[in-house]
Image (cartoon, rainbow, N blue to C red):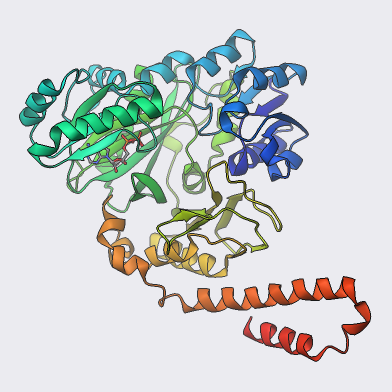
Amino acid sequence: MIKKILIANRGEIAIRVMNTCREMGIKTVAVYSEADYSSLHVSYADEAYCIGPAPSAESYLNIEKIIEVAKKTGTDAIHPGYGFLSENAKFSQRCKDEKIIFIGPDPYAINTMGDKITARKTMMDAGVPVVPGTKEPITDLDQAVKVIKEIGLPVMVKASAGGGGKGMRLVEKEEDIISSVKAAKSEALSAFGNDAVYVEKYISSPHHIEFQILADNHGNCIHLFERECSVQRRHQKVVEETPSPIMTHDVRMEMGKHAVAAAKAVNYSGAGTIEFITDDDLNYYFLEMNTRLQVEHPITEEVVGVDLVKEQIKIANGEKLMLKQENLTQRGHAIEVRIYAEDPDNNFMPNPGKIEHIQFPLGPGIRHDTYAYNGFQIPIYYDPMISKLVIWGNNRTEAIERMKRALKLFKINGVKTSIPFLFQIMNVDSFVKGRYTTHFIQNNEQELKQREKTPEVAKDLAAITAFIDYTNKLEKVKTEKSEDIQTSKWKDYGRRNALSRL
Ligand code: ADP
């Protein structure tokens, strides 16, 4: 029986996991780097231990240190969250060796799905459609030219060990084949220490549609429907929604069956995601499997009504899945936006800094998965995501309108954020109509740059900035010269002015 879980992660996902642990009466252990001493996950846990300096390699990726804390604290299980060690087969094995439950699949599934060439072969054998392309790695440049001509341009050259959009090159012209293969190989080598690449046909008008699956250790495996993740910037998801606006009932059922077959092919256990790429006609192909909880898992939770972290913990505990495929349904519509500390008006430059003031929108259908608080200094060392804003509505139109309301009311002062950009996405015609592909951001660049459609956001933010500036000044003056406050005319004027604009 799992009584204590160490969360080998930070930020919003650490808090997310701890929330479920609390509900299940499970004690939590946080680990943190020196840069994260003031991070919310540290105070949120029952116990917290510093595991090293700021760079991830010396802290959140330090397997030995994490195992040491787990043993010292009598931890029964480790939840890896996403990123960091979540898809590290060595870590999963190390936990096994130490008789600590790894909340995730065993090393075999991680290894098989972690290598894209092996994963493609395994899927072909399991009868799951894969993108037409090479079965073996490309060994030399002459061979690359030959196979790419056979497949037919355009193609994607992809790193077998790839992830996070790295080691991937779109090749459209014959003369670019050699330079693209070389570039993909060298990027793969420096990012993953493995330069194996393969080639896939480029799917035009692509949609990224993924299926959530859950599998227990008793041979049961179900899917929890799809998530549409086609709003991407540089192959990274920006907005996710479920159900997919282009999905039909029949294709959903068929894709769901293939997702389950994919998981069963590697004897999967736990929560996982099968990613597919589809074209406009809903022909679909396996892309990859993520053997962990996804960033965008909350939208499935909202629509299907299942706590995925709770299911992960129950499965890790050896329990049988109680959820039955035939009883699962999708209720309403959910959208998630990833709010980053970055400047959308300056090429999305990361903008970490101190959150002077944060005010979350409230009301029906609004969920925040976040670790931000007033005064929190966002460290420069990690992903600058501040919050995942998750909206549920009875239908897609309601969810979009609710998202617009929530984004308008979301105030973050002190750092620049992607909020105005995300708000603009909700206004673009093809998004509103649900007719968009992974080229959405590229295709709507100009419209997404516009800010005048969001006067409320600008006005509200200006007002709140003025108000906070005022209160900060007031605080300062209070401590310096408290007797002057009542009589100071400019301060009174400033306060009234700021409040009237709010
Ligand atoms: P990573 O593991 O690096 O995230 P994926 O294989 O999951 O790489 O692909 C990331 C994104 O790249 C996809 O969501 C899609 O937008 C695009 N992509 C990948 N393969 C293809 C393809 N064959 N055709 C068109 N787009 C693709």
